Length: 290
Image (cartoon, rainbow, N blue to C red; front, side, top):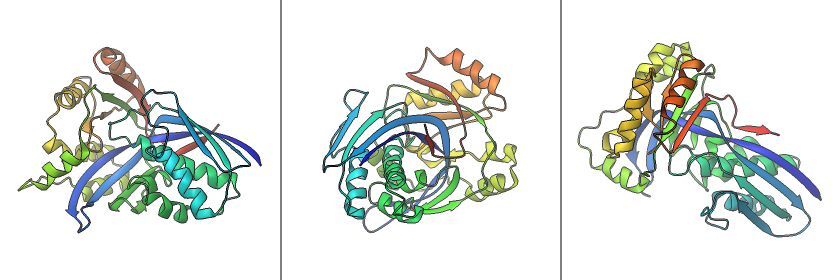
């Protein structure tokens, strides 16, 4: 065996994110609209005869062992399939960490997808998602991509009508947000202001973009005490974004624009003010084979 694949793995944003409860095993249940976007990590995968996994990454400090979801995804695929091979994985990171954009989950899903392709597709997409959910709650979505509703802990996925290419600007400062701390703060809310998921579903089904802009929302914003998130939201709105919302549990913020030119102009104005500034768009698929 000697097989090689280069794969681009898309990030995600949460157009709407609600926390609906907490299970006995302490996992929280969600109701969210996930959307893949054109910010990509790149995976180079080389498979040969043998029985070892090695992982390298272009970003210093990223773990390259069992602590990395991509590494664990390779282990899980080989264990579940019963296959043995020598795997060399190289990650090139463009999705910022601690952003709520699912970079680690995207990489894990990319490994599952790539290995399935390279070995003759022994698993269906549903079976890959069943492997993926054991790695992380966001992993199944990345095996689906585009626009989808996620419920349960993220494993109950309903594909939705794909959105057109909407121009986006995504900002992130240097600060991170602790996801466990954010969930604890959500648990302490007495009267949470839940996003209107039904209005968002209607907006997507009818492709009513004005309704979509009005209903982009994230419950985590109500418990986030991060000045850079507040600054990013205001900066995007000042630039003319139709809406500006934090994604995931933070700390990246996306703004949706009506025109690409406006998004590019905004990014140029803010490129010196935030650690991460990226113009991108909603994407119809999670993976691109190079």
